[in-house]
Length: 217
Ligand SMILES: Cc1cc2nc3c(=O)[nH]c(=O)nc-3n(C[C@H](O)[C@H](O)[C@H](O)COP(=O)(O)O)c2cc1C
Image (cartoon, rainbow, N blue to C red; front, side):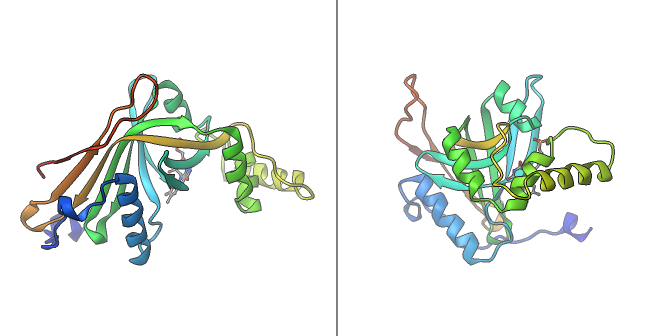
């Protein structure tokens, strides 16, 4: 476990306020494109943290499947642990760690279920077997053994062998409406750059203007 004792130098290349686009969502897209170009494995993977009804936090990896001015879209099982947590407390945070680029993006916000039509459209774009898998797994529920899980998949495959697979009601998308987006760039001597964009969501549900500030590393 050599990595536990390694002290990597994250380099001189700076992240200056002037390097960043004025809109953090556009800046995020630019970094995602950079991560794709750098051939990072699963560049759209992020760690999603939630807080459940018992105030217990939990984090797990999910895949970003859309990003636009409305926010960050991912899909999952609404009855999973994360789905139950978001129902109890919509405050979530997300971490994109593009470590080989010395880059990290932290997002805080509110997760909302997307409209059913948007979930339908995304579900329809998935490969057939992934659609079947959504019917075959009660995500986060215990199961006796692997054979029982395989049986569920085989039964669902047979059920939908000659038909389109409809979206299960319990499966769909969420959008994280961001209130904070921090861009982190590793620098030498642990003097990293951190630029944070912050905005508030008004009582009418409309987000305000982004404010930008530099944070100490
Ligand atoms: C690279 C990677 C991508 C994943 N993408 C998703 C995803 O998009 N949606 C999802 O529900 N689970 C995804 N998972 C599985 C989750 O990490 C997690 O095991 C699952 O969603 C159940 O989490 P929960 O019990 O906390 O709800 C992914 C796991 C990995 C390692």
